[in-house]
Image (cartoon, rainbow, N blue to C red):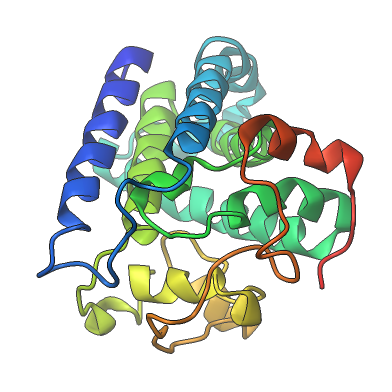
Length: 256
């Protein structure tokens, strides 16, 4: 999947989810009109596109050299679908570990606060991620995939799947998918992660097994009245792009 194709597909997903999650029949809560801080998230989307370009054109060719021949040979004869399933599982496990670290360590939490600063949770809120966080998420997960011998095509498809799934998890969709929560993360579960009182739970991006093993899974509904945002800074964390981009340097504080 080429860089331009990836950006086009993801943009299409944002538009589709954005329309569905505002439908009275499908929405979890009524979102503000016009959408608050839309320009801010457009700027963060620009950061995400830049991070993707950096990953595709610079980092991925370098990381591909990490392939370990014995491991690569084990996977060489596997069908594409089997490689993709393994790739998604490995990618999600690494992402889970990185995500927990983003909450555990002060310097990393200062970076991750940007993502938690959205006051309304919808698909486009997925874009709120600092460039430093994008690199922290891109590099370890893709590096491990290349180390075990995954070809570039599988890695690129895995990243695309994770990105699209992330948009759905952050969406404002009210669809009862409890029956899949034994295996998969749903918008209902990830919503709890963005509520300050339970932000130290539900770290998983695709699979719930990691949270189950770590005893961090919270299966509870979110009230439409509950607020989203940075714990302890819901009303004070900056919403403007330039100021928020500087926050990790200016205020490397601990999580409360």
